[in-house]
Length: 158
Image (tube, rainbow, N blue to C red):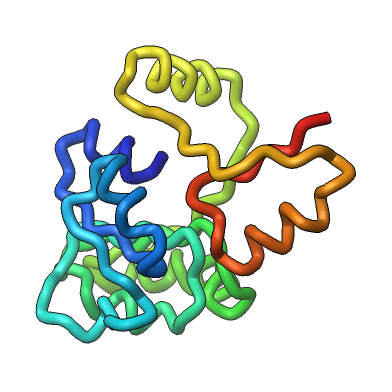
């Protein structure tokens, strides 16, 4: 959904994920896809206005390297080290530099759910569902997600 939201706001989007997800990323609007198994997006000459990291697994300094001087690095999840760096150092880094480092934490909000529903209802966004699992198969669903093989969201039916 992040790709679709960004595209609806007029952004040019480069998605970074494993190569098996390239086709899906392009189908939801990504302009370019980088396969992190074969290419390191932090070692290119490209510079980005925003890095939205949903699965931070590397030192934040590496991702910050590809930000424009006034860019924003958003961290929404990932390994403990980078997440703690974003939470604890984000406010300090943001005060000392033009670049912003922000840790995003979801908060339940009726307003946000209504906005997300309207985004989907309007046709601007389409949820991508990988598979549906029965509650009895929760372990299998979690394993698929943990391996990074899910092409979209995994749904558990009660």
